[in-house]
Image (cartoon, rainbow, N blue to C red):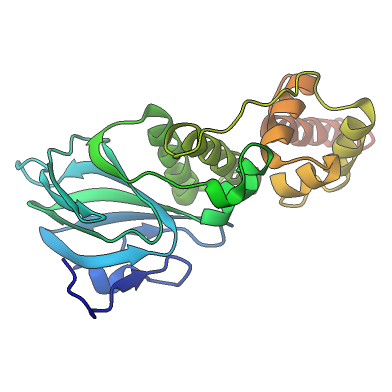
Length: 268
């Protein structure tokens, strides 16, 4: 633990190679250009990370041990110490500004997903006063199927990057923010009363924009801005109106466009 007057080291995933000084080896994979979130895949030998704080909220997920030993180790979170068993897929949640330290008793593979605190405030603006959003520290003692799925999808996008990547990232990070607000924050958000989908005018404006800029990297934030609602509500209302998510709709439009071009038809 830190002593009075000692400066706590910071890990700022907004900076390139931010974790390198804290671990024996550089990350195997790391994301770049994803607004508000950052992903790293690590493959490390046995190590002990020095006490530090993060400038972003961090989710750590144990993936697998690289030897026959288990994944157990110790973790200090905000002054509390727990010895963790760390089964495959278990997650830890380390809020920004919380003192943190941990060790691994064997060579290991794990994921680090960092989230901008402003993302939770932006997504939660319709439900909670931004100043009241406080993420709860969570030791690596259990699993969360939704978070596992989101991390897996982000890893696949990082490794194989396919069509519609930016919009998929936007959708995943919005889903993650809502999940954290609902399940890992001190103040629970109120449920939305929206139930009728987008208005015909807003739906038309959004779909026309999508078709006009179909060859661009469309972002969820831009589409939500056209509808003049938060990204969370836009995701829900668009699916209520169209029966598919914005990401699925854009993929359908691109497939239709390619087919029409192959058939020698006009754009639409």
